Image (cartoon, rainbow, N blue to C red; front, side, top):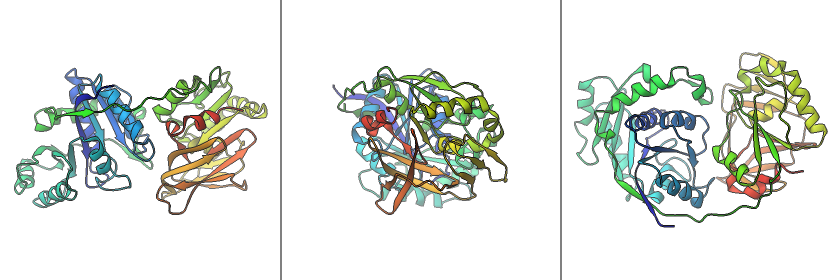
Length: 430
């Protein structure tokens, strides 16, 4: 296949909480409102930002990570997007140079020009120093410009631009606007489906961009083709029931697509609303926010009976993070509220005030190694001995535990199925 060319921009920042997601979503919504086809990608492992970006752009948002996805997967997804998009946007993670690999590593590999979002609140001429540092720290990075966020006034915008050289330019000075802000909770942004006025917020944020240089099309980027692999139909004839609702929404779209490519039929159900498990050969319980729905999950005794029958029949069940919490005897939130869960995995978990697990990891499952990540605020107490522990991508220390009880496998670890499709298939086979 030949390379494909498409205008593209990589949105980054000097740190987290600068407003990258809001600006990326606003830019996507602006171009979508003009009738353009926009494809957005999110750097690194993330379940919350992509759903906001999906609502803004109108298209599925995939993750890009050089360690978790691998270079070929990243290139293949961008090459495919360039075939039918008028604009490609990539939102970075954390600060530009944070992590190994970093957003800077990905932008350099892909050749996408950068636009840095800088929170200008409480800042004046120092804005230029921060911008200069970002642009000059690593030679060879292509900078398209800078975006001043949370600007207080026109006078403030003038002060921010005073010592900034004309190249790279100040693309936009965006005013502080609570009506366009995206609400947050302990794991990050509130889920897109829970924000009743999300579209109004996105349109309001997009309107700020319309009259700025940021709204102009960035330069085209050539995206080379990557090798394509035909995977064996290991899951042909298998029906996998997947939990999907406000309590269980943390799943990579690429995981679902990979299961389908392996031949599986996917059936979705809601532990919050459905009284019966779909007829299936295997169950997938992704992560999410079960701690926000304790009473509803606990009261669904009919579904509990179906899941117990599924396990007693020796059928596979794979659970990640929030899905694993649902399997436990009890789950408690930060306020001390507690409820019984499925009782399929011995133990209990309690939501903590501080982060308990974070980072890229690789887990050796019985069917092979999968790459992925962990991110959770709960602490698990169980007498069950793990059958394996993940290895951290950094190489420092052991990672999350993997538990097996009968035909179920469970861990805090979130797996990225395309990192090893054969191993992913075996999670759902007897």
